[in-house]
Length: 484
Image (cartoon, rainbow, N blue to C red; front, side):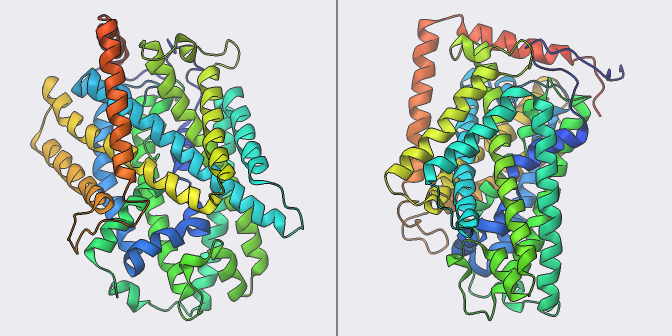
């Protein structure tokens, strides 16, 4: 086989061959935004999983490693801005590809919205200590506006900013967690290790928000035109981001939950858990630094969500699924500037409207995060089905590939059951309102978008032909390259 060539040209007008492995990894890590969980969101997950929170993260990690293996069956053979949309279209056909595309854009946009709410909430609390109290909409506009500029201007600027912000935040939280554990005498928390009070149902229900915590690990696949040696760097980034985030989550969750034991304060009612624990450990100044770092991590995640959402819109538009303007690249910046602008406006508009209806930012963050999980779960299940089908078509299917597919789907079914619930079941109880309605809202969204595609293909019979041709051209560019 021929050796993978070190550079490639973007046929889509994006900036080619410019991102190193570290910068590609930063894209996935930024959307995952692991520092936001211990800094702000851990109480939401603990409210569902209790002392089984660390186990929910472990199950999520194992399941998503199997999903990563299925993603990399495609990522090691081709690359494009379309992320998993192009892979699933290749494996399962246009309708599955459209379901994936719409699920991805919903998932990335709602992730950005949720984290934008977190940014506004967290920055409001930090600025509030200085006696300054800007409106929620002002803070939402600042977060969305700065993110838009970085995504609009240059993908390398985006990647470098995300890498620096997330790296500093992780380092600060790691140091603080060690101090918190030392303050507790490095004790073992038997209530967590023995899963005291936790049930299989609670652990499964918590997996819904755990999926949100991991969501975006695959977003590096949207940098297919811009990554150096994409068939190597992208698969490594997908696996690497999942492993690193999972280990970080398990360790920090254990320590934060341990830190709240015997304090008399509920972690579920604390919006700044690390800030509180830093005060308990006598290093309040470090907690303030972590708060600033977490604020930058929120920002990195907003930026990281805009990048892949815009690129999925960009490629789908070039296949005739959206207005052609969304498929254009900026002549000098080499970014999908129209799609970036549209995604940024949507990310600002929805949380702003929720704020006008007096829905608290913290609540909006939880609602939007739960709904976006269904988009990611749908995509992860579809890619796990598409991988063995694709391998069978190219005569590369092995028995272990089928096993990885089945295991990935099985693990993803757990949070699906946990989110929907089974009436009368103690193992998978129906979630409380309004979370019980979210799965049905997502199904309605899919019904509408699939209906839209059906009407569109009836009106334009050549639409599907164009989609298939576009996907085939992408795969043909890499057909003679070595699989790492």
